Length: 332
Ligand code: RIB
Ligand code: CA
Image (cartoon, rainbow, N blue to C red; front, side, top):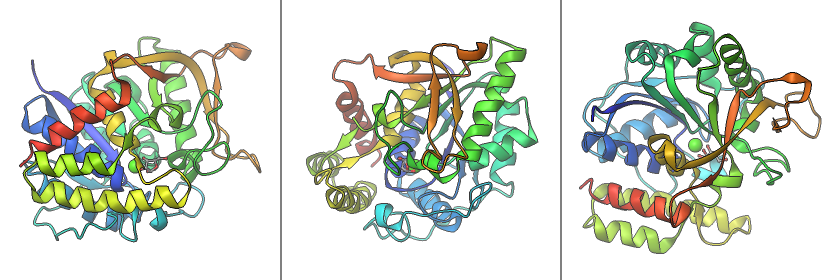
């Protein structure tokens, strides 16, 4: 099997760090070719997302891969950061080392387009932060939806599941709803031209909140990794995430959205999906950032997206996190 070319656009971010480590494990196992890692301002500012991504790649022993800085903020509105969720610099309690790794000279949008053109019809793109850089990439290359094998997005919340930022919005979308809506419109236009273009695959909170990481799982990770520096830094980062989740009444645990989505991007057959027409509310006083799904074809609008509504793996999200844990533990 040839390695699958993969691009990750992320906003590390504590759960993004798990997604990065998992993809590095897949890269080192020869199952993927990490064609690009794009950092987008999200949980923390662009400088910290870049610093964190480079440091996590170092700690994971990743071979050289292109890492580029993407959007430094949302398209339209001032960016909102979440130091209370991921820590002041986005790595929780982990004290990340400064990196020897250098940034790619291209910006994130250019790396998106170059990676897609280098692997026409083959690149699997995963977004685990705001869609701001992807929106810029779509301006550079409107044919991006056709160039990708598939796009998998951690974003939104569906089927009436409550938001984590407002009652109706999920954080990655809430921070930059205009960007997320441009993604929806781009896939709508591409599929109107060519129905064979794969719909964008969206993983909302209704799915990703099932990915619960516990202190016991952190302990097991460090033990299985024989106390690797990576595993101990991830455990330190996750401890902050446990404290945050406890502070908002979720218990001393962490909903780790991003590694579940990264795993699903590499295991498309494990996703149970439903086609919808998807747009993002950008104007509502009370509903800004809401993912508006239409599964009934109102006004004749064809599906531009597919929602991952369940997993077809025995054991569900817990089994996925177990596989992620084992993969990361092997990175010693
Ligand atoms: O709402 C959860 C998402 O927002 C995750 O990707 C987390 O890292 C934050 O970016
Ligand atoms: Ca994220």
